[in-house]
Length: 301
Ligand code: SF4
Ligand code: SF4
Image (cartoon, rainbow, N blue to C red; front, top):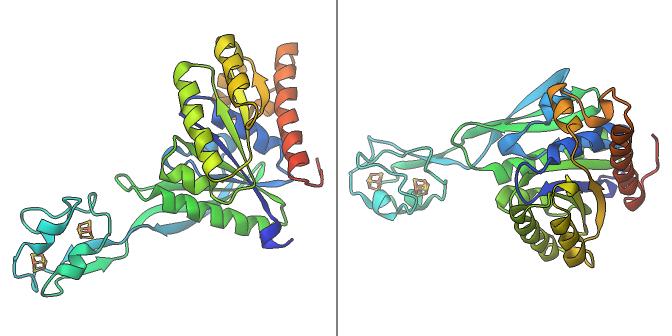
């Protein structure tokens, strides 16, 4: 397995609350023989709650460096405070760590070299063994904002794990929205699955996230979750985006998704065999097979 041949797919949603976690959990359970799971939703990592790691290796994540003033060298000229555009230096000429963005402007401007830029542990990332195989996940320390960098670290670690475990695929759970962490979870992937719901806000957020995919030239496919809560908007989504971003699945509303979360399982693992639930399980399996086919993976399931 060559490192560069490993395929990467990110599952994103324009906003939170679309059921993205439930869908990626089901895909991860189905593709467990194929994929390494990377939870890049580092601001709200929740897949570890479903897949409860049996054993984890833990690593420090070094985010942006932070400035620190050496009081013995400081002549209290105020230059650093005047020039810090993040207002991260207090009137007592002390750095406020939660505001410092590590830009080093103060470091370069200080006339007495009283400012040092220090390494800063801003979170942790984990390589975990779970019932569906290896999962990479992470946690930022409270107040830290370098989540785009942490996403990059999670992806890099997941790709390495895929190489070691001889897996062809990294399945990435991306953050909601269109900010820096999402971009970091999308850059360079082979395909994106976008989970949305048919509400007005869902529609607008979908529009924004699809623009992002267009910008990065990433092939994208839409999954409309709870499509039956508003058929009109579902049809609008199909009509307006289908040319560039086909809708590959429309999943109906069903309490099984909440039940699965409560039982700390993916929907595929819930032991219920009513027709409606079997149909939903089949739909999720179809999405898994779609991934296998599109990514040209050898099926081991
Ligand atoms: S620029 Fe340097 S010398 Fe001036 S107040 Fe800041 S730390 Fe002190
Ligand atoms: S490194 Fe940048 S953000 Fe941090 S205190 Fe210095 S000037 Fe402000």
